[in-house]
Image 1 (tube, rainbow, N blue to C red):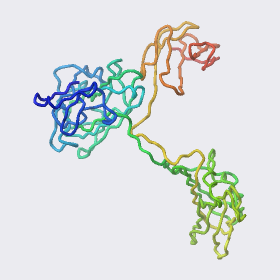
Image 2 (image 1 turned 180 degrees about the horizontal axis):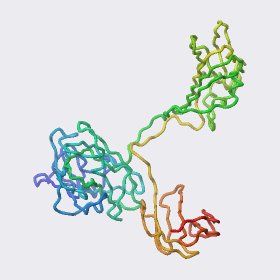
Image 3 (image 1 turned 180 degrees about the vertical axis):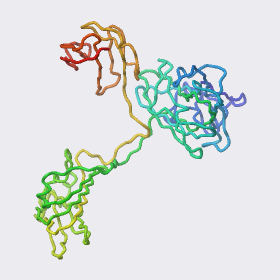
Image 4 (image 1 turned 135 degrees about the vertical axis):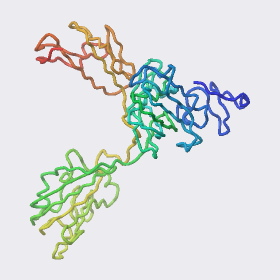
Length: 467
C-alpha cells in the first residue's frame, strides 16, 4: 500500500522508529506499518476524507465467482471507486462504489493491512457504515471477505452480505473473522457476488478492523415456563390451576407464580428449592454478612380486590426466632375478613394469588462482557478423503474444505496440531464402499502420535451404505 503526498508537504514528514509519519495538521499519521493500539483500527484509509484515501484502495476484476480469489489485478472494469462529498455518511467525504448495467460479478475493491503479532490466532471484527446511494441494489449483491495473501486462503467472516436497506438510512455491517496463528498480512475485499445487470451504487465510511467492541452489562433473559417442585402443594394447599414463569436478571432470578387456591391451608415456611427450576440454588452468601439477616425477596397479591396481602422473606439468622432459618417465610398480610396473619402460612381464602420473587442464584454473576457482532469463532478444520485407505494406516484427509489456522499436515503422516489450548470436538464420517456391514472395523484418533492414547474407540457392527 502506498500513500500519495505533495512535494511541498515533505517538510511535514518524520521517522518514528520504523514508521514514516506525516503531520496532517490534526496530528501525526502513520504512513506505513501496522496500526498502533491507540488508533484501534488497522485501516489507515478508513474514511474518504480526501481523494488520497480513495486511491489507496485498489479495484480488481477476477473470473466470475461469488467469492474473491486474490482480490487483485484485472482490467476493463465496469465499476468505479471514488470520493463522494454530497452529504457524506460522515466527515468531508465517503467512498462511492458504483456498477453499471452489466454483469460485474468477480469485480470489487480491496485494501491491504497488517496486524500486530498479538492479534495472531485471535478474533477480529470488521465494522463498515454503508448507505445505498442509488439504483436497484439487492441483499447479497455485494459481499465482504478477508484474504490471507501469505497462505492465499479466502476467509469467510461471520457475516458477508451487505443488506438492502432503506436508502434514507445508514446501515452497519458487523462481522468477525479468525486470524492465522503466524501470518500478519491481510486483505479486505468488497466483492460483487451476483451476476445482476441492474445498476446500483453504495457509499461507505468508518471502515474498521480491530478487536471486537465489548460492553459490560447485565444478562436479562426472556420469561420462560417451568414446573416447580412437587412440594408446592404442601406449602400453599390444594391448587386448581397454576402458572409459573422465571427469567434471569443479572445475578438474580425473578419468579412469577400464579395459582387458584381451593382454600386448603399450607405451611408457614418452605425451602427455596420449592420454587426454583431444576439445577438452581439460592446464593445464601448474599444474606450472611449482617447481624440480623432477614431479607424481603417477594410479595403476595390476591387477585380479586385485596391487592398486596403479604410478603416473602428469607432469613439466614433470626435473633427473634420468628422466622425459619434458610427458608422462605410468608410474613404479614390480611385475609378477606380482615384477620391479621403475622406470619402467614395459609391461603384459606378461595381465590387467585400471585407470588412475585427475586433473589440471587449461585454461580450467576451480576454483569457479563458482551461482544458486538457475531460468533466468537476459534479453530475450525474440515478435510475430506475420497481415496481408498488400507487397514492400520493413517487416513490422509487431503481435500481441504476449511482450515482457519492451517493446523493440518497432510500426507502419509496426516495430523492436526492444535494451535491454541482448549477443548476440541472431533467428528468423523466413515463409509465402506464394499461391505454392507462392517463388523469389527475400527475408527480411531490418536493423540500426540501415540497409539496407546485413544480418544475415539472401536466401533463394532457398523451399518454402512455403499459409497
